[in-house]
Length: 263
Image (cartoon, rainbow, N blue to C red; front, top):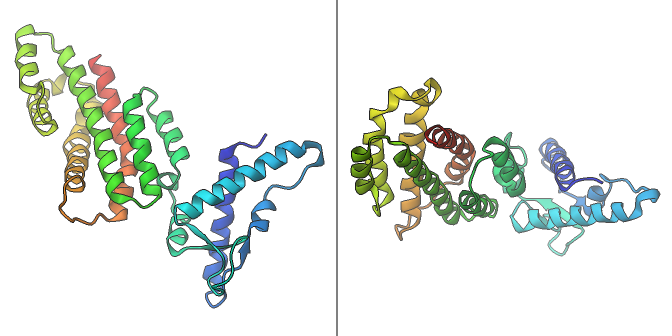
C-alpha cells in the first residue's frame, strides 16, 4: 500500500519537473492536467481497491495545494478553462523549488519535528501544528502568534524543570517567588540571571549554544509574537516566518536537552 507521504512526494517531484518546463518555455502557456497526476500511479488490476484509494489521496493533496495557493484550476491563457486543467501559481513556483519543503508541508513538518525531538509535549505540538498549517495557507499573523506560543510553552517547561533542579531550598524558594505568575519576559529575565550561575556545570554542548537558542531565537520569536498579537499594523515577511519554522526544530531540540539535563 502506497503511503500518503509517498504519494505526496511523487506529486511534489512532478510539479518540480513542470516548473523546469515552465522556465525552459517562458512564452508558452501552462497546460497541465489531473491526468498527469494519475499517470504517476499506474493501474494494477490485481489491486484495484488500493489503486482507487491512492488516486483519492492524490486528489485530496491536489485540493490542499489549491486551497494553500500553490495551484489553481484552469490555465492562465484561458479564462474559461477549469478543472481538470491545473496551473502552478507564482507562489507555487517558488515554494516547490525550496530545498526545505517542510514548512510548506504540515504533516511532513510534524513528523520530522517529532523525530528530532521525541520528548516534545502535546501542547507545543498543538501550537506548532497550527503555526505550520497557517503558514502553509499564507496566514502569516496567525503563524507568527502560534510559533510564539509554542516557543513560550517550551520556555515555561524549561523554567519549571530548572526550578525543581535547584538543590538549595532557600535559593529555590527565592527563584520561584521571582517567576511565579509573572509575564514570560520577566520569567525569562530572572531565569537567565540564575541560569548563568550554573552554566559551568552543564555539558559543553549546552554551554556553547545557549545564547544562540535562548537569547537569540527565543527573544526574536517572542518579540515577533508580540507585534503580531497587537494591532500594530506590522506586515510580516513570509521569509521571516519561514525561517522561524525552519529553526524551531533546532530550538525545541536544544530546550529539550536542557530540560532532560535538569530532570
